Image (cartoon, rainbow, N blue to C red; front, side, top):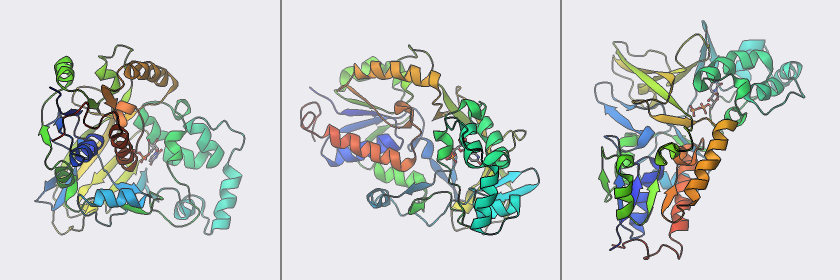
Length: 379
Ligand code: UDP
């Protein structure tokens, strides 16, 4: 007898697959190593402070695709939160991402034309743009690079920005207007009732087993399920047989404070190398309720992947990409049996909307003639 599709991981990729397969009449079973659903998007309510705590760092959903925006809103209304982080560098606070106000604060310019001229004088055209450092020197020059990128990126990735590929930094806009929206997409927000509730709705009617680790019993699970959708770290699936794939992790230090407002904003980045954390998140600023006289903040410390620190970011350096190639080849041998999906298993720096789109695409391909009714039990 064939069994249900096994989905390993109740994060965004796994949960969207589970929803779509279930709605298509295919039975799914989700196993999740942690004690909660939602992966690193997980939030939990903090009734005393009247907010949702982003347990693994801030997750702001943003997309330019109306269909994806409609899709996520099916599982819970999003509030109108717009991410406008600020940067602390020494005693100074800067508008961020780099925009006309930032350039005013740093160079004293006041108009787009003056800002363009200030940048032109500082850019170093002809610099090799393949690294983060090279891209920054070519596009924004040394002062902006040293104030906003050098220390933060070095801390975040534990490598000098000249050793990191520039696609990491190309995500960040540089604007000659006063627009300080972190994203350029048309739609963004966080779920008004938290991601906890959103994932409960995504997984409604799906069998989910928490605190159930797939990897130690991989053969057992594989033997009982014709198809496994695996969303964990790719190297771990293959018992690290081609060497470790590097993932950057985060350690979080949370603190409740007897003040109504600690920093006046949801996210403040600390871009100096000497400050050990990269950012402080003040959770109440994601939602409308700021009335309580207490607040909750989380300091984020970049960390190596270690027990107790969840892998978060693929480190896409040439060494790791070479190892990734070997793991992909191993994965290809399992085609039709195991589908590797999501940020960790695909080893891609996906945003949330990319993850949802990738999961929807994967299910669409699965529901093609190969799978429908053959490998899986239809309910
Ligand atoms: N970055 C930076 N300074 C900042 C914020 C970001 O140099 O103040 C760089 C850093 O290398 C980071 C990348 O930009 O890894 C992408 O930042 P983003 O905020 O998109 O990262 P995430 O939210 O995924 O942690």
